[in-house]
Image 1 (tube, rainbow, N blue to C red):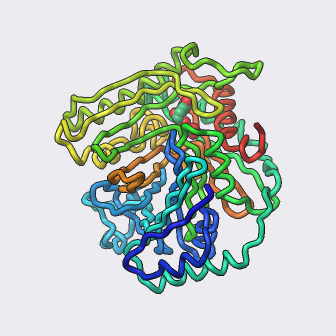
Image 2: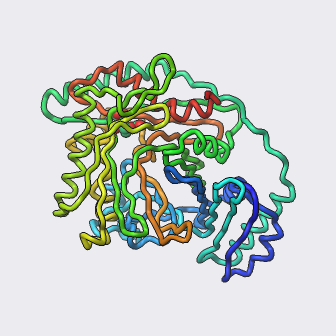
Image 3: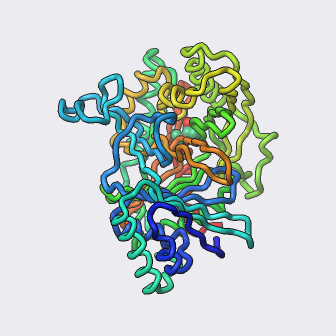
Length: 446
Ligand SMILES: C=C(O[C@H]1C=CC=C(C(=O)O)[C@@H]1O)C(=O)O
């Protein structure tokens, strides 16, 4: 991510000024945003080299309804529970009301600054665009960036290895809840529920989010890797998720995937498993089929029959393997340009993070999980972002394999799909493996 630096801006007149700041990299832009309290998102799409960064000049982010057709260029990040059903009347009267009278909880980072870091080796370039922003804010940003560049000292490479924070009752509590879930399934109240847990580790100093992001990009080329800074909560969320929720490309091709069933991607002797030869149990096949069925039910609700279904196949996701089925729709051919927005509303939360039936599973999670999931198992991704001279695309992913950074403290989240045939201890082990996706990178464990 080095070499020429160019800024395209017509409206602000900051070009000369910003060029004098030298060649800021993702880290410079990210740290400048952080120091000014501006939200920022940094991401890399699956199987791509380019990295994207946006900075929003809205210190308190707007809560929006996730409408891919209406939103300007930016980045969405939604909690698992993204509707505040008991919102106060004043909030309900606010401009952020959606048609159903419910105040949405999805955060939107508008792309006031957008930078692309081309990752094709030697010829990499960066481009930054300034959009819709008051010139004083822009000036403040570039002046801060310039001062930062002048006083730049080489940062320590590592902030030390994190130390786990012991939680002696966590496993017993999780396994007890899995037992309750199995009983509820046997009573016929549910077919599947995804139960999650947290794991905390502490660093000696606050870790460098951009450095962690870069390491995750390197280690997990097929994942959607992201770092999102939300200053109003003092949080940075970092993830390497394998699960696409909804994407619509510049040609109007819609995609979604159903992902479930988990096993290690490695044999006990450390050699990599061959995905095509992976064996899956009936429990895992059923667990994943429920997610696919859920997607097909959503298509049925909108009477959409023309979709291409591929899978299930074994999918490698870093240290793990899952069963995945992909669904593709040509929105132009079916004359359904709003399909992305409609499906995003219908799909979340899918049976990969919530369960079946959805409402019963949601209520079970609320009643039994000891923590608030916050942004874990919500969704996130760029909206209407143009890159590589292509038209705007939106790519929204399920927010799993993620962690919340609050200063020196990292909270990892992981869940496992519980069905009638679940074994509580095995489900706990599965959440341990899922936590390893990020932990391995933080521990510098190759
Ligand atoms: C809920 C998570 O993963 C989902 C995605 C793939 C496999 C899953 C499973 O096997 O349970 C989960 O449904 C998570 O990583 O926290």
